[in-house]
Amino acid sequence: MQDYLIFIDVSSDFDYEIYQKNDVRLVPMEFNLNEKIIKYEKDSSFSYKEFYDSLKNGSMAKTSQITPFNYEEIFEPTLKEGKDILYISLSSGLSKTYESASLAKNNLKEKYQNNDIYVLDSLTGSGGMGILLEKAIENKLNGFSILENFNDLNELKKHQFGCAFVDDLMHLKRGGRVGSASAFIGSLLNVKPFVEVTEKGGLNLFTKVIGNKKAALKLAELYKEHALFSTSLPVFINHADNLLFANLAKQEILKINSKANVKITVLSPIIGTHLGPKSIAMFFIKK
Image (cartoon, rainbow, N blue to C red; front, top):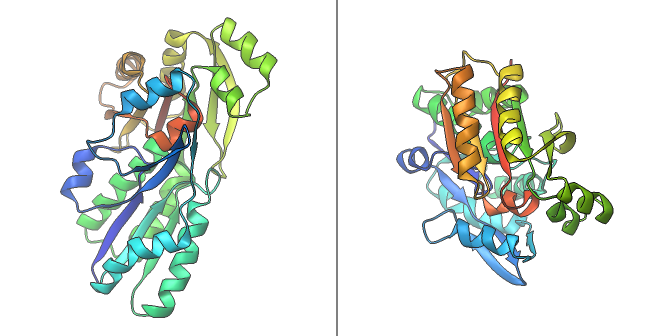
């Protein structure tokens, strides 16, 4: 069985130590902040607080697309080493990264016919990709071939639950996702809309609550309603500079299931650009 490496893009949010210990390769992504292109590589040089403070102060950010050529440059050194590639991509319902990676795969296969390249459409993002990454690493350590691993992840992704609450409707208004009147009234009332990840990997507005505390408690309520308690895979809570309420949600989840493996990480700027500062996302395996 030929050796393979696991790749994942930096829009994922996961336990960083696991990435470091298991030779996982990260695919950098770019975003534009106040007309300045920033290459995000998920390292210690990036200040999440400065980024989210900038958004809170009215800065505009938008993400950039990874091209097929970018992927070819990233993947080819591994193929030259004679190793195969298993890549976990951000949802095709949120980005065209899966499409670009698939085009790169087809181009590279013409040159590296003896190598396997598997591109997994995660149909999720952030901590949802973190769950898939942890499972991919576990499978590889347990001797799964690259095809066995790919097939197992393809099945697991169907059983994920992902949602997020957005702290500031005015941020969604700036991004063109809600109208000015709705955003203004919602902000005055401190409305926190919830979005869920759909089966096709997109986002759908499904409920709303008033206030940060109730939003954090709603996350725990959703966990109680939908989570599969017996799984060893983690519950990810990803926050956009909102650690206080991320911890509150974690505490409430542990009251429901004291054995839950809850991991809190900062929301990447790739996803945070769209959800806005103070937002919190949650991902777990559902019943």
